[in-house]
Image 1 (cartoon, rainbow, N blue to C red):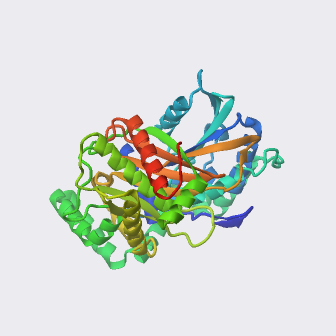
Image 2: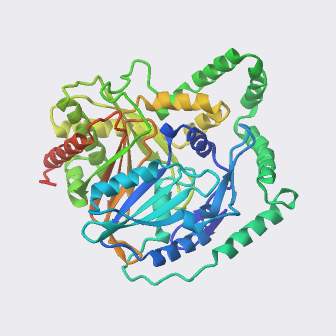
Length: 494
């Protein structure tokens, strides 16, 4: 499916990739929630009716926003997407108000609760909550989207449908969503199996396409796998032994994606606990200051971002009197080759954080070089596809256990998103901050930064079972970035 409206091409596949199917499957364990979310803080409450009109237009233009997941046939084929015949716009777009006094802490806590509330897996996998009552006469918008729809870069491009470059941008033409849904269902019925648009018919289609998918992706390996699987009901020990064999066969791939290397530090003992609970903290940095310091230190904005996060993590351990053997971190390497909206094109990559340093400048160089080495080793997302293809043949319980074991050795994950460099607006309200809530997914925390109009907003999405004093962590991060910017010749007192 590919159409072009606006700046970027809209392209979504009707069948999930192996990596997307893996994210869909492991979400059955709430610790591994792969969804991404964002809070946009506005200078005033937005015009709710205008915002609903813009989102209605987006739903009409972007089929994935009105589609639900149709499960595949067992483990043999990945899920597909089909129009939701019971699509309810009001379910996905909500309007609430914070109770007085409407502090930013209340907003962050509310957003965390909204994030933790799981998606209804029988509906399209997105939601927006318009929030009034923020202190200072401000407003906010909370948005959440399942990772199977798109990655962070794709989500930013999708936001062009409801974010404007001027406060008084003209309203969109009205759309008849009921007619759009009816037309989509009619088209699917006309082209679908047996002339019927039902989940059963769709599943029969996924079964047929699934065997072709298996043949293309896994060939002889899967023929052997299916033969082995047939014997599992009579011999559960054989199932586990075979799974261990497959895990061993993909050892190098798993290592690239985050599993601990033999003999490498297993991560921080201080941050070893894990839970499904979350806490959001945030700090902001002037973008020009970060850019200037990065150039002076010999690196990029992202190098400053990750190095400062690593320094803050080490500072937190130092305050607790803990000297970790090593800290494991990860960052995301985008493998996108075009500017289309939709789908996922990235590889998570692990690196070992140095645990001691003589100066912030030398620490910066070492972190930069380690990240560069890891990034250069990633040519495309083929390793992720191969791992996901194998994992999707295993029982979900076994895959989630593997994923938890891998994530338990990651102390923090990082991601860097590039937003607009100019002022933006949402239905009459100016965007002041964008705070991203990246998937924690079994790590101790996810740290994601997003640039916007001269500001770098950093969201620390924390598992409080691992990091039991989020306030202290935030202060350690502030201190770390002040020291790092000072090493780059920039005085920052924020």
